[in-house]
Length: 449
Image (tube, rainbow, N blue to C red; front, side, top):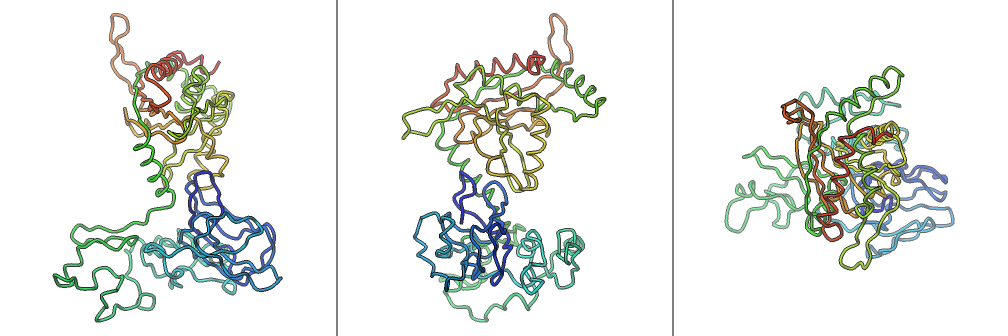
């Protein structure tokens, strides 16, 4: 399993693009791997024949654990090394042990209904998403006609099947439960407990890694994606290990909204894309960070004797993708215009939705913006995205009655909260940063000047 991102600790096999017996040339895509940030293609470094797949689709493997055997023609593939090895394989090292089995890892590849192959078994007839749905919802594809290339079954082909409800697994693909299961059976709810009948086991939790079901509450188990697992681990560590504190400010955003309306009218007339409030805020934060470089820092924890001050201002933009929270990074944001920032942000958001971001597009951030204003949220706090030391949570721009001189006027106002790492950023510095940001928002021509 290669390391495909700086935060990757393990990977999940999404799709094998080669099958045992297939010829492999240098540069051929062997497999699609789901990391904590995206689904990425992994290319072969050597030519040969794929001899064996060690980690099936849908299973996880730690970094450095081999996932397949490649026969280069010099002889039989070498036997796998022990799973305890923690060495990361180089391009020349082609074999190692399969991952240690766990309760969450399937014991065998998915049933033939979800991963059948065409063209002599070398290509799956169903897309990765379809095979995932087959495993989760126990779908029967025997009567589904694929509309994809080469008859490949794609997500759209399942609309009728899913609309009619989830069918029960067919007897051909699901073995019948034994009449008298042994006490060692791994199946939840089948073995009687020592103090009660088997019927009581139906309300007990499922075994570790298996979906939990509960007929009383209508509960069903939903597999957690690799992205969400990593998000959970990293943000739990951030919330428990980093001493967060929060500073909130409110800006009069009437001039900002007026400027945006004027700019968008001119951009539309010129046939150019419009800009969003978020594009202006990215630029404003970049300029505020330039003025307060001590906010643009990282700290390695108690074991570190230095604080890293970053000269480059790389702003991460939190994106709520279907697979989980993704933070693509706009590099050198302080050197780009608002229209350049808007175009780059839209491109990164689209790639995040398609899970096609590269490691370079998701690493190297020095500050993050999380904006929930488009959902009508007025105010919230965000958890710092390590190894950064600050994140800005932006609420909605709302029209409110505002005192202007001696009169009351309806004006747009914007609330935002800065979460900072108190180990390296104190309250006064955080307040000065927000003061600069508020001045920029209330005098928006300085943002685009």
